[in-house]
Length: 112
Image (tube, rainbow, N blue to C red; front, side, top):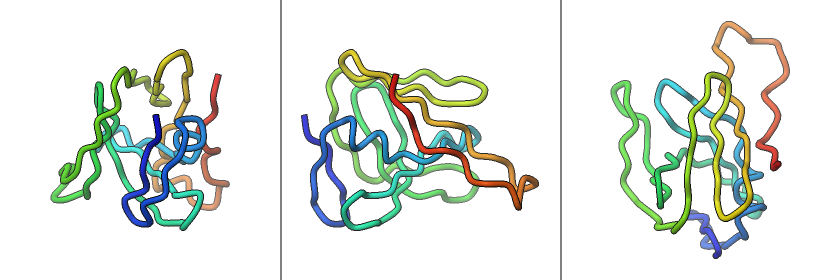
């Protein structure tokens, strides 16, 4: 299974793709992802069996493009989003609130 960057059409194995997720916005239920090849930043929603790409709009996230990813699962926690595919799990930390300015950014997703 290869997952795409919609900006440059590069494709990545799941470990490289989900390891490039930097943070999870629990309020909008979206993950920030940066393409390892072109550096484009995308917001996406991890849904059961698919990735939804779109844009925040009016306090919500509108999905415009979908990529099917069979067996993709998600689990929301208070401080992270767990993404599961096959036997691998990636933990995407929750975005820090704006009041945490001056602190270092959240670490990228890690695999367990």
